[in-house]
Image (cartoon, rainbow, N blue to C red; front, side, top):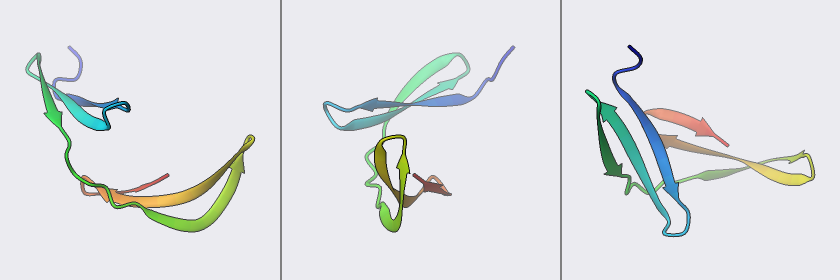
Length: 67
């Protein structure tokens, strides 16, 4: 049977677009996400492999995200 209601995020890096693909009752719906994400860059830094990274936070979709 599987999951009836699910979604995926599609990123178009070249055109700088983000879209949400929602599957509902076996039909797919493509919804553009036009929201501006206001990332807060934190002071915490870390080296992952050979890459330097810096911690950031954003609130989106009723949740707090950390990258």
